[in-house]
Length: 572
Image 1 (tube, rainbow, N blue to C red):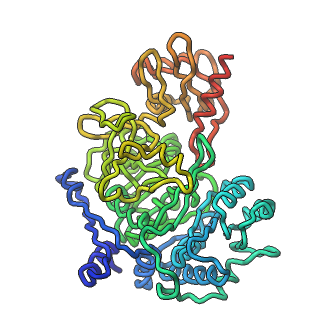
Image 2 (tube, rainbow, N blue to C red):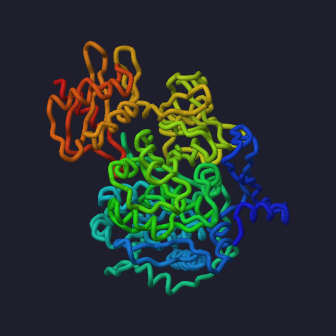
């Protein structure tokens, strides 16, 4: 087995005329950490003709025995190992199957599959023959599917039995849809994934398909739509290669790692956590097709399969912080990660006590790769997303694009440099208005706000429209929520602004109580006093409402816009 970065670097030496990749991957040491050296030493140039499936998957598949996936069934016990060679062959079959169906380069293919190996075969198969795969979460409804097919003008859709009825319901409303492919099943009038692949050759190479350039589209992700209808984010082949930054500096992946990220296949988090960085590293990925979060099942998987690198959303870490983990075996873990939203310091402390591992937070979006993170060897300041990743200029700016000073709240933004920022999208698909809103003053505005300390650490504050302005103070919902969840009675919370005649806005908290706690005025006062002591007094929630659940997007993010509307109505 070889290291992909070194392999591709050798190719540029051996054949410079073909303009192959030149990339220097640094080994991050826990001793003598030098952030500036890390930034100045990184170089990445993308070859003109690059196809992730051919240039990474097929080359890694040269090692016949290297395991790509440990595919675990829903029961958490039964599993099979899938090699890189297996995926290379199965994706070639699917690429040929698409060609046989008449699918052409840049045609759109909607892919809604659970965590099964076929998901990789479809995505890499599309990449090999030039079609654009559009991953969708398994939580999509019939209306969601129709919106995606119609908006993208998709020609094909690949689903499992889970969504077969929904697709049957809406297919007549989708005039561009020519082929419906069912994985692990059969249905009248539909194509069987297995039959198509069995009838197709497992060989395909560049000479058999139109050439793909690094800027050619490879994927389209639909954003979660927390404030509007989902936008289409197109990613090119260079995007996959740009995840060298994610792999090297945040995830610290090695080829002998057993990596597990808890994610749905429909989100860009899957591209980060079970796809591009891991295939660049040539490591093994745990793919658990379970439903929901079963603590004991997850602990057994970590122990049985000797997981070394682990990434989970803050919600999972918070749940684990409330559980008894004394019986769990975490001896295989060496590096733990979190992303999606900031993680409160208390959960981080609890995890380190139980496992001996710190949690390294990373930050990015569907529109980017990892753009800021805590790196191995760097001091972790709990609650901070860390510092900008090498290869990218990330800062806190105002509405006019001016860089702000220490402690000033502003927009998290990526500077549009002469060499275009690696992994940054170039605009929303066929939506110039939305694109112009986020690209201004020479920066990409993420829509998130933050502040930085004197050492350059970035501290998340909230979405740009989530900031609470109360009696002249600017308050971050996250800071209040972090204090709230440290109270033993609080299982989950969401904080928003509520209009107030005296203060302009006040902090209102919606709280889901932990087991064995019941709502009361006494408990409200206790929680308020707790926040005053654990945060600045002006940040405490002047109004608390206990709820059974919180409104969320299908990606699991809290819909604060809905809670703000609810808070406004409560004044009427």
